[in-house]
Every structure is written in C-alpha cells, then in structure tokens.
Length: 441
Image (cartoon, rainbow, N blue to C red; front, side, top):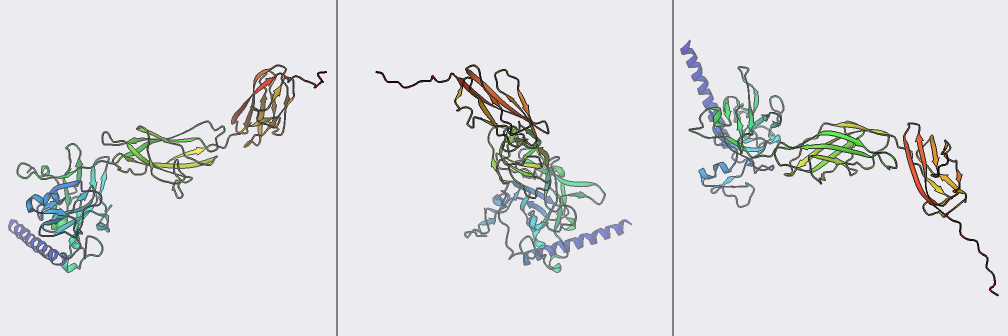
C-alpha cells in the first residue's frame, strides 16, 4: 500500500512539473508580446512578498525588486522605457492592480481580469467589519493578450484557468482566507489563498508558516479605510410661513481612522426607495457638496420639496483624504401639508405704514392663503373680545378710543388643526388739528 501510494504521489509530482513547465514555457512564448500592466490607477499602497511552494515569490510592488535587480521602476508606456535599466512599474492599489511572479508572470486584481470567476463575488472585497478579504485574483498568462478578455488557446495554457481564490473552503472542509491585520503599522495581510495545483497555497505572511526568522516576508498595505454615514435622522421646524417644507437631514460621520474628518457629502432624495429620479441637498441635483463646520454631526436643508409628500433619502460621505463611503441605508420621512398663511391689510395698505387716528374706523382685509376651510380669529390688541369667523372674505372694522401702539393679530386654523398667527403693529395718533385759512387783515 505504501509503495502504491508513493508511486501515485510521484506520478502526480511529475505531471505537476510538466504542467508548470509547459505553462511557464508557454507564458514566455505567447505572452512576451502582450501589453504589460502599468501602475495601478488607485495608487500603489500595497507592497511586499507572498510565497507559493510551487511558483515561489510573488511581488506586489515594482519597488520590491529594484534593489535586487539594480533597475528602476518606470511606466511601460513611457517613451524612455528601456528594459535594460527599467522594470515595468506595477503595483496594487488597495484591491486593484497587479502582482508579479518570475514563474507565471503578471497576476491581476482589476475587475476586468476577474469576469466569470468559478463561484461567488469575483472582485476583491474587504469586509470592514472583520477585515476579511474575499474574491479572486488571476494569472494574466491565461489571456490571449493583456490581462482581460479572451483566453489563450487551451493547448497554450494547458487547460489552466489561472484563478487564485482568496477565501473559501478547503477539501477537508476547513475555511481559509486572507485578512488584514490592523495592529501593525503598516497593516499586514495574513493567512492563505489557493491557486489550484499550479500555484497551490499562497502564504501572505511569514507568520503563517513560522519562518519569519529565516525569511521575514509579508504583504503590507498602507491604506486609509473609507468612512461611513450613519444615525440618519430627520427633524422638522415650524411650518408657518415656510415656502417649502422646513426639513433638516441629519447624519453622523464615522471613520475607523483616528483624526479623519468629513470633507464632503452627497445626498439623494426621491419619492421612491429606488431613487430613480433623485434630487440633492441643498441643490436640486445629486452632487458632491463640500462640507463646512466641525463633525461628527452634520445637517442639510433640502430646497424645493413638496408639501404633503413622502420621501426617501440616503447619504455618502468623503473623509479629508477624499476616501468615499458607500451609500448609507435609505431612510424615509414625510413632509406635512402646507400650513395656513394668514395675512391682512389695514384700509387697503401695509398696516405698518397706514395713518391711524384716534376714533377713526379702520377696515381690516383678510388676505390669507392655503387655508380652505379655515377658522379665523381677529384680535385688535385693545382688550375688546376677539372676533371669530370662518369667512375669509369677512372684513372687520374697528376704531381705537386712545392713542398708542396696538398689536393686531389674525390667527388661522385649518381642518388639520394647524395654526399660524400673523401680527402687525398699529400706531394710533391724535387727529390732526382742523384749520381754516383767514385773511390777516
């Protein structure tokens, strides 16, 4: 039994060696003319080395190899690029970009390289709750050109699909996966990924294998975690004499990185939870707005909302390093119906400017709006009983027996018991003396 097992293992190793040799040979033959990756657009904040028992070292940043090769990193599209003195500038920007293996060549993390993964979510994702990394990477040598698109012919890649899984379940049902340790600075990737028989297990940190004394390798990341907005809340002010609903949208800015503050926000408001035609705050469109003031609490007053309408809203935020959050969970609120808007004039004029004389009759004209039906209460401010009416066309008359200042009010209550009060101050004076022109002789 032991001899049979040894022969079986030997044959598997021989087959694996032949497959790897074929892949490596094929890579350098058909991949030599491929467009090489350039620097990751999101910024190269990942560096260091991972280790595979089958393909050896995997470099996550061009700068990792500068000292060993004596060459400098340069964008492959730069006209002065010279392979004799330059390395193709590559790197991983958080969770997009490229890594390099001397055995299998480029390894891509860009979404375009990860279409059609065997199972689950293809793109690399960091769970901010537990710092676990999931998704896939892929060897670029399996593509016909570049690091995306059509695959090379099957005979050129030996049937290999190039996938490297970053989180999953092993054949013995034990879970595996890469995660970020936030305790060291810079932060460190930990544990294992799996690349099938060609690549095998990929260790992202020497501590996973207990060999840090002899080979202190690890993949490092200097990155600022994105913020998030939570504690969404809506408060509403007094609706009297407001041309639009006095709504205040409030939220809390949160960020896992100490000292980070909010630099901008974007709000979407819509009358449906799908946000098919959103508007913003305070603007009429959903745009990024530079923040002002100190955090962590923030507020915005939307302009031009409709009365008696239900809305949904959500917010995203940016920190002071311009890292963008995801959209918050949507919250809803209802704008109240428009309140009555009482108004009146005195003798057909602005009450503050009309001349009022003692014992002279004044006619008050009700000019109220948004109140059908309404109950009105007149108070002339001199102690006489208030007058109550439901007739907006009622024009009370009144006179004042004494001079002085009197505050006249008109209150309006609608059918929903919403009440608003308008007041004007009258200045009652003595009547002007009567005179008659006579001849001095």
